[in-house]
Image (tube, rainbow over all chains, first blue to last red):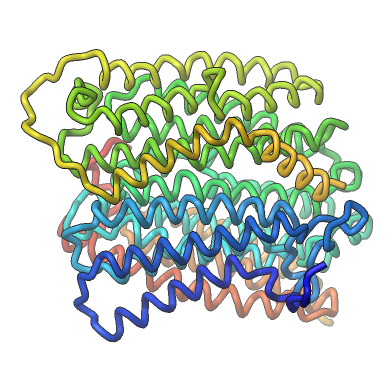
Length: 504
Length: 101
């Protein structure tokens, strides 16, 4: 037992630390609006997110969010159940904090000449706050507010290079589709409220039977909410913003959106569909099993993402489509909930999102490094980079093979758990789709590794500099991807426990 | 209560469809923004009508939050449309095609 007990609201500390960092950056900005002290700003953001990471890991180890029967300190419910801090919330706060720290360090070099430094970093921290809050939100109100808190800074961040046509175009498309999907989401929320009379997730679940006469409204509401989640996780049918937004955005922001934002989208989807709409009760009211929708979405998303990625010439666009494919893998977590093996697939999806957070952020940061060098955007432009930058290219090899799911790396284990979980849940078609898609994805991931390591450079590019921040972030991401191996046991346990608590 | 709940839902669905139609047909980014506002307000009508119907205030309070968030969204959106105009000399959403759609 601890010597003193922290008050309950401190369970939200990771999110509070992130928002405090954002406010601190605003203070720096108001004292000296034209400041270009990049070390101070990037350092503050990195320290803030690493502190949030440390606190979240400490809470997990100390047993916050573990039910008391399992020897923990119990799940913390705050503000009348509007927020809940359980293991799943802490797990995803860890993902968000890691990615934010990597992005902050990498932006030190990438945003070197940018005029609005403090604004950039505070927007990143505010978006991270929104994502961390999404992990803990337990009511449709808090979910919607946290979702917007994560989205609004992201729109601005995507279009932050305001003299760059690609960035502005990407920001416009991201914003338009985001605004549309949040309107659809909030309409879905209003229909669910109409059918059940409540917005708090547990209360919705308790009042599902009473919604019998409004089964149609409830079903339509759930369908519209799936649309909102699909946007945030970049899965079909709201996936088409992703290639544009990721390609046009500054590469560290693409990394941020494709890893942290996607994970945050999944955590609210997991929470809403396990807590508010338990399968039997919901099926009784609306007449359809909603996990069927996720089976279809998972297969379509992973197939579409991987096939589109295989045809790309632009590396960043290839990574964007591959991130759609990975959203499809994570959707298996929701598709498999109907069966008894539900917690295995959901735990596997959470593991995958964690490992994916490391490797995908690393891959996008390598693109950031290439953009920093100005070598070009296509596979041919990357030819022969390994002779000039072996360390970064070795890290790239790790990211690519881990993304493809080659056995000794972290990406293999999370995919393996997804595969086993899908088979145990009786979803043979989904499991087959997962294997076929992984095999296909090896083609385009290996193509990048081949370009970098085996091909000869097309043109002479002169010496390449070694930006400290970008290198540090890439190497750190690579180390995390590799370290995920020896500690994969504890990660898997944490994810499975967290899934068990939520489903339980 | 004089007006049945069904009529409120019909009204809000009509507004939602008008907004959706606007998004699908208009090419001006500002009209697009207004259409999204109509859709958000359709949700507000639902929330307030259902709050009255269920006799709790949750929906009304959420409607207030939605309005505030809609305002914040418009602020960010207008900023993006402004830089769009500066870069492309147009607010037509079909003009920016630097990347393939």
